[in-house]
Amino acid sequence: MLLSLKLSYKTTTGQDYQAGLPPKDLVLINNGTTKEEDEDLVDPWNVQTSNAKGVDYDKLIVRFGSSKIDTDLINRIERATGQKPHHFLRRGIFFSHRDMDQVLDAYENKKPFYLYTGRGPSSQAMHVGHLIPFMFTKWLQEVFDVPLVIQLTDDEKYLWKDMTVEKAYEYARENAKDIIACGFDVNKTFIFSDLDYLGTSAGFYKNIVKVQKHVTFNQVKGIFGFTDSDCIGKISFPAIQAAPSFSSSFPQIFNGKENIQCLIPCAIDQDPYFRMTRDVAPRIGQPKPALLHSVFFPALQGAQTKMSASDPNSSIFLTDTPKQIKTKINKHAFSGGRDTIEEHRKYGGNCEVDVSFMYLTFFLEDDDRLEQLKQAYTSGELLTGELKKVLIETMQPLVAAHQERRKQVTDEIVKQFMTPRKLAFEF
Image (cartoon, rainbow, N blue to C red; front, side, top):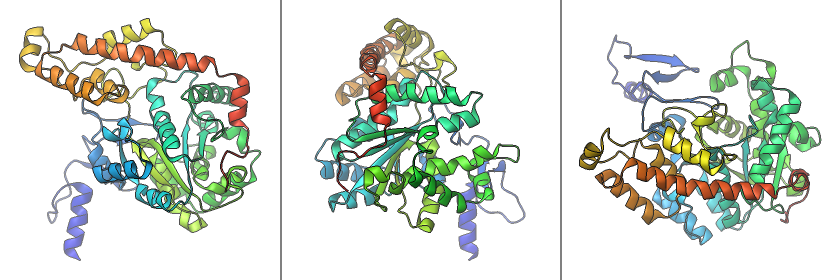
């Protein structure tokens, strides 16, 4: 027993137990999770790291208790779908999961599952980083051929931000246009705003209430860091994000069937919501949702700063012109290059902290070309300005094509996607 206590002490603090000595440099936050001075802070509202390479994701997997997406799992996805795995999987952009193997078991046994992801509409314009979960979700929807529900948490943004209910709802509809422009199939996708759907769906509200009953105030304080001065809307909100994980929240899609497995692709900062959901699920007789976690999209200024929709220079927005994209990358993209050309040629650049290279791992689909750029930049043959040029040439057509598709999305199309209805699946 003592040995196991010493072991758990070491996993919690990262230090060996010494009698009579408290652990060094540790502050306890969030109900007993530990935080070393240089530890990354990751929760649904904040992402902070002091490391130029960005968040240490291997540590995060251990801290959150999820599983790493390894080559075995990627190969299994390839076998199950008969498709080459998405470059987000091949490059470790989606890097961690919970119960993905169970989803594949079900799929191989011809059992249905559905996808659930979402977006908090905090501003009218979305940036390229917001597209990551949607690009991947679209691929999953295509290769597995399953229904998809997309939650727009306009209620959350109203509670957390300084905006009116009307504004939050308007942003939700504007953001829906960008999401639809990713190419989702209207016959297989339901997009809903919480402010809208909650009032019309008894199934959704019943699940919210069930979750609320099984989570104590103490638990949400521990998970989300709420304090006594937070409004009660915030305290009960996690149940609203949890409820779409259960198929009975969408009786019109699943023909009233419960117990259909749910798979949630999201950025890892959303995981606390679904740890809570997975904890509650068995107690309300529902299957636990499975998850696929993505890394964070770095700000132009470097991976240790979080992008903010309120700082136009922190990212490339989906509304940017080719000229703005060029200026932003040239002027603001953090470089891993050396101070002088001579030094750069001699020592080479550092791809691990270079934002232009990071962005290319997200948006350049050609693996060989990416590897070639990496070799050339690391060896010093390719200069920072040349690497930035490759990124500019990749991003300009990508954003322009998105803008073109978004123009085609009328209010009528948004209405189609957002109307509760049966999708092209039989349950």
